[in-house]
Length: 394
Image 1: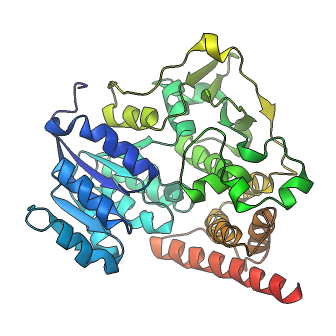
Image 2: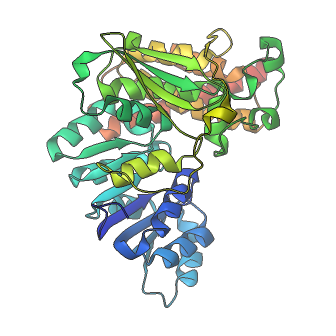
């Protein structure tokens, strides 16, 4: 057990998702020395109940109201308090905790993450939308509360590790790596007829469907570029992306003297999660160690933004600022849903995001979460409207 983890109060927002289950695996190894305040899930009442019992959580909260009775029945007699619904999720985020994993994806994760930040303690951030859509609001809340934001995404966590305590002004640029996904070698013509099944075959990482499709389209890397700019105070042209199919180097920092400092590790999300959980020290994990002899070589390639349009669009919205990143994120969610449902082609993901951005009536700076929710909803409506128009003209 790493020093500093004793009896820490822990909340996991999004405990039943891919990041959440990896977090739970690490917490179970430390369960005698932590106090789990709340576990929050989406719809999987069975898994949430199992996690809550294993970790003796104070609260088990499920977002879907329809799952309340199931969860309540599964936890009957356990002493664990049960709640359901959007407000209950926000209230769970507001519970006093020393460390909160913020892993609820999409706009649904914004309010509970903001509440966790306002506690003024450590927040492990796995919700991209928190900085992509509400970056200024979130960072201002972090500053006001004196909270510590710890990036969980493997790439941002790698940059944080590579930066250490160095002065950010010494940084010339950073490099985020991408596996290249299942279509790294595919032609544009092959990508045009790609099926959801093909897009879901990620060569390196095991993730949920949404993030796997985002990886295939490079929308995920686009979101990461926006997030990195806000996390580390960088301009768009200070953030490079390289395809690295071995997924060993997760991120690099180039300092102004020409030195590169990189973080490497196996493709296991428990490594960056453990870094945030044990910060500012380290904890033991069961993760596979790299064998550099077996690895033999590492490849790096430039990204073809004519094939991976979402990355190019993400750079545009980062430069544009305002609510453009919110519309980008919202339209991408609708595009992924439509692709998985067979309503649009794979290359239609980038086309749909572009169409929604082109249809934006204005691009103001958001002043509140309500502004973010408004533009998130508008982005979804613009994307849905484009799908309907294309279907009518087909």
